[in-house]
Image (tube, rainbow over all chains, first blue to last red; front, top):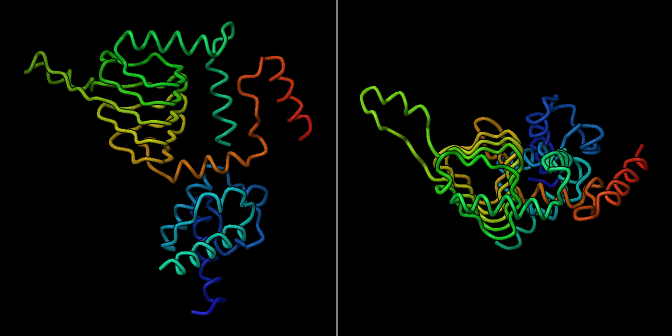
Length: 90
Length: 182
């Protein structure tokens, strides 16, 4: 799988999680969307969304990598970095 | 949202005429006298420990908001008494260390809450809750890691360093903060 394919797959996973917690159309979710201002995702929904992403992707994202995430893209970056770290460790 | 909600709920629960420290010590002492097993550094704002308070064990550094109910028996067992006149169905409740239980949550007989959990306000909790769980709803379900909620709360601009300030200073700091936002 190419990096581009992987990024598209990650966005699809995250978009599905956003749709799950907000009821929005997954197809409308973009990497530049702001979690609070654009998607109206509160702290509880954020935690739920991350759990869904981790279950769907099979990648555990450390809390500290998500503490300051403001956009969908920030979560995608944290997901990719966590996957790379896991691959390096194995 | 959760951070603001927790702060608001805790503030509501405090009696106005007494300091937080005085309230903690008096209530915790009274609950211990009834038989509730309570660890160190707990903040408890409910006295609803059912008719078997000695079946409840609470760890260290636990926060329990107002309106929380610990149910150590199942009242529906009364329906058995037509044929079994003294029947009671009972259960212990155990709360681990560093747990927060939000306003009006209900803990049913037999509940085991692991270390580091956050129970959202209004949750109805049954069964065993793994450590570091964020728990929400009726029936309560685990929706993620409590530690992630806290990591986000630490970075939240509305998380202020106001706990323990005298009330006029605290109010001033908070009002200034929200005035700057508006």
